Image 1 (cartoon, rainbow, N blue to C red):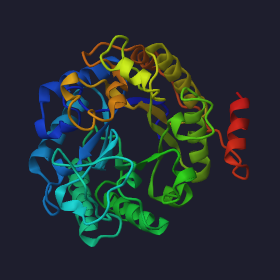
Image 2 (tube, rainbow, N blue to C red):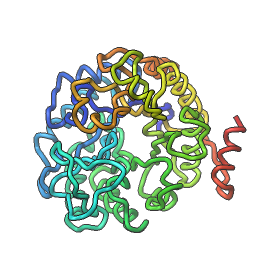
Image 3 (cartoon, rainbow, N blue to C red):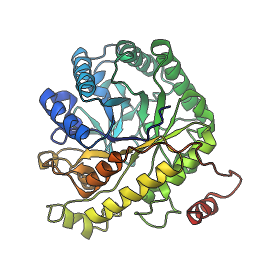
Length: 388
């Protein structure tokens, strides 16, 4: 893996959000990739919204593939690398599901299921074991990696964004076989670029469906999504030690380098229409812009110190108010404000922190820190925190 500490963002356009691929605009991508480049960031994680890229199980969409090529060419022109994420899937508090993938099952309870822009009461078929679902996934992976595997903008391939929030594997073996199948399909088409799976850092604690040690052989680096409010042993929602601790824990369990693929805070600009609503609701995700900037700075420093590959902010930009009455931003109000920039394109304090950190050209610390695994997790975290 490269020696540079990788810095980047998870990307949806500020004025399109999840409707990006169905209303694709080259000029928008060019302008916003220019902003990302100007911040000194190097990696853009994008999401291949499943219903746009595969509207039929046996026929990926040619138009979406052409638009993906435009995105990759634009990234290359700016010297950016791209991490495409397949089978999205879960994003911004909702599950986005192709109509053909719906089944006569109950949806996951924790977030709405959306198909063709509308919420549905149907759940998703078991894409870990359903033969047609598996065949469709292999087909999409084969076409995308076969066609774009030699593109100079590709950083690697991500096989999903927290797939357990779409459908939880019935057994750990189901999840493992699914991952192995798709990993090996990528390797047949692209032997050069690394493969990962975007998982919440709390999976090992709350969900045994994806066991780090078991799934590590079918990834070239491990990815975590780290949020203090998701773990009971965090001191508070601004605890800067949670992300580096989860990174070290995952690296120790899996024996592979770790990318902190998503972290951040909801930080509405002062005076914004929704800021008072969020703060009065007691939403634990809501911070001031100054608190957010401090948190980002602390987490970036600590992630580098423990030997992490790099860090990606949860969102490039806050979302434009034109999207607020559409799912998921109509119900997931906090998701409007995770950006490094405002909805008008101004740099937020957290964005300045990322920019300034990038200007220092940080390098990875090797070898990475490791942890003993025979200690209860809450005690292990206390030891880690106190060892600073």
